[in-house]
Image (cartoon, rainbow, N blue to C red):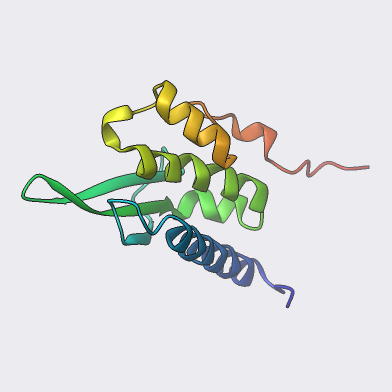
Length: 132
């Protein structure tokens, strides 16, 4: 089913993120940090997505991915970018917070298909609106 409005496309993009999270959660069910929660935030304005480890008694008990609604409003429907960001964040979940953006994390992100830098240029993902 094709989205007819921008709001429908944003909703479909969010559903895609939630489904991708579910599929990958099942694939990596042996991870020490399950389940994974997905949230969408109006407060995030400077990053696309953030990974947060939930802890109890010093032990990781879950991962939360928080996506920026500002980002989704601009890049909804751009599944190539959404997937690259998702796998970047999943690599953080797999290797753990202690690795940051080190070589262990980079190898995991690369293997998954996520971008392997701390930040990306969104210009590469914007659609050229001045065609013709």
